[in-house]
Image (cartoon, rainbow, N blue to C red):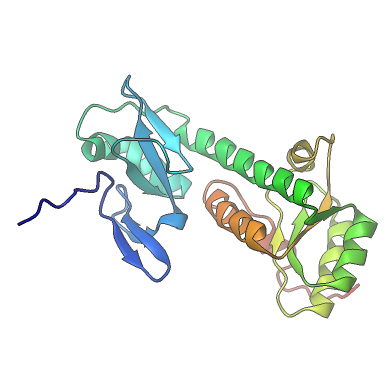
Length: 220
């Protein structure tokens, strides 16, 4: 009987939605895109591997602050790596910062590809021409401005996706600016990647768009 190669990550399955892993903390079976992989550095330190490319055994945790904190508290990393593993006390905050950097990197790619529009007037003009892939609204932006952008889009299209978890400074950093408040990503493969990373960030940071427009029907 031929030798079967053993996968050194935990509990790999496949489905139509892609690879499925088991969370080492909650034991849930989730799509890999909903999780964060962790590798072990030579010194035994638990290292986030958001791109899932580092060599060696990996431990997968649901992309959620509570799940990650549970993994650290209950020794899930030592069990998963089958050796002593040290997790930083601020591991969840580190993952959050790394996810923000990944999102900023994707925005930079969108700028170079010409698939993003920035600025209040420019965004409103673009929304009138085509369905937005994702509206970007700074978490610390003014309510009046974001409402005008959102309800214009909502009046034209059935489904409007909004990302409001990044601050104006974080958005600005992606484009070499001091701050950005309004943006729109064109629909496409790059925006699909953005969506995956943004969903992972939502497990570690509040997504204010969930409450910004709740129960609102005003149209601008």
